[in-house]
Amino acid sequence: MSRILDVYMKAVNTLAEDLIGIRTSRLYLNELFDELKNVSPELADAARSDAEKKAALMDLEFLYGKPAFILDDELRKRLFDKSEIPAPDGLEEILGISADNCFLVSVEGDSMQDAGIADGDTLVCLTTSTPNSGDIVIAELNTQVLVKRYIVIAKQVYLFPENQLYKPAKIKSTDKFMILGKVIKIIKNAA
Image 1 (cartoon, rainbow, N blue to C red):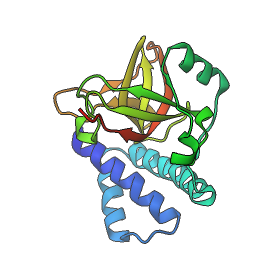
Image 2: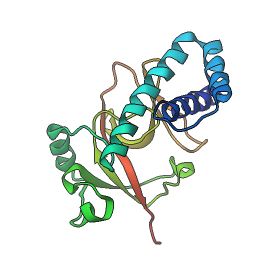
Image 3: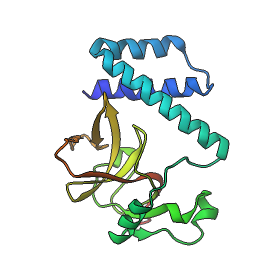
């Protein structure tokens, strides 16, 4: 599963770059999609669809010079009701985004250490309910708030840790699941 996930993410990212005009190797891209097709034609189609969505967001980010996002007022209200740390004044100047669309989360645990996120770090998060496959997100799963990599494979959502000691979570229709935001910056703990 880990190998296929790696191939899937490489295919999505490489095709998205190709779609927005970044030079990529057609041979490499074809090899990735051939490997996905060997597992399942639907998997290759899902990767192509995810790449098109990612390319559209990359175009918006390039055009406006800042991360593209969809703002949800109810989601923001819920975040602040959960006592997440509000974004500080001056965040707009530092990151080029509005503090109204951001919140901070303090990390507890080591499940994302291979992504450079350690216990005690602070994450700057952009309020969104629609992340791209591959984004690191803050999600609520059955009342537990998690930091994980959001992956969609053939319309199935997974939350992947970035530490081999932990297993990915496959989101089921019976789960209470909600994306609270996506991580846009890691502030390392000085301790």
